Image 1 (tube, each protein chain N blue to C red):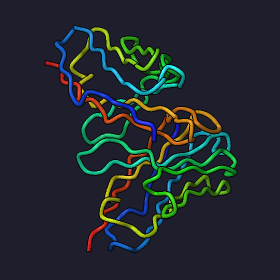
Image 2 (cartoon, rainbow over the protein chains, first blue to last red):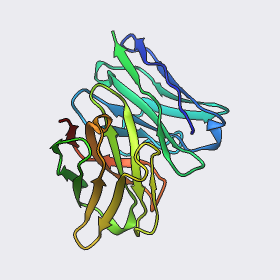
Image 3 (cartoon, rainbow over the protein chains, first blue to last red):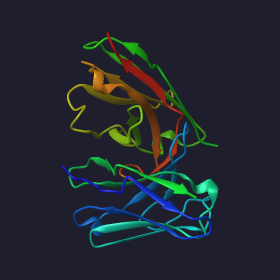
Image 4 (cartoon, chains in turn blue, purple):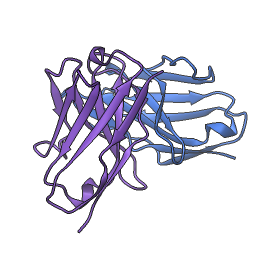
Length: 107
Length: 120
């Protein structure tokens, strides 16, 4: 079965750029979404189709996808961005796959 | 405004069944595929199942295939998940999510979830 790999945790200083990777075999050939989940809350879509932002998502959220790696980039990271982030894609067998999630700490 | 409200969770014994519901509003239900996603306590997200916009296609995670059944009642704007032969590792918060497409799009709106606890 298809797998997506993320680092379990990352930290970033306020105002700096956070880049969260998600790796999978030929991931660049698939559409990747990213979800933000804060403690006790439901996930929120922050990036779809590799790099598109839904309405209401701040411009500091950006996405890219090439080769075997998709990346969620948060420019000028703020304290409110501290959360778990999950990448997601559809594999060829028509199953949804989530990465294991990355806990982003802003300190 | 999109609104998804799950219900039906609770404590159930191993081997028994449970049916979850998700009441949808604020969008054209018949235009969108729908999903169930679960999250075990302290763990990450696990995609469970999808049903296409018209109910003609359903797909499942290997971990639930043959035990769970996703369905929809378009007359009631409601999504269902029948959980059968439940196991302890099915314990999780179950989220209902709307797809941005008729099938295989992004999960653009999520409910608040309903907790299923499988325990004797």
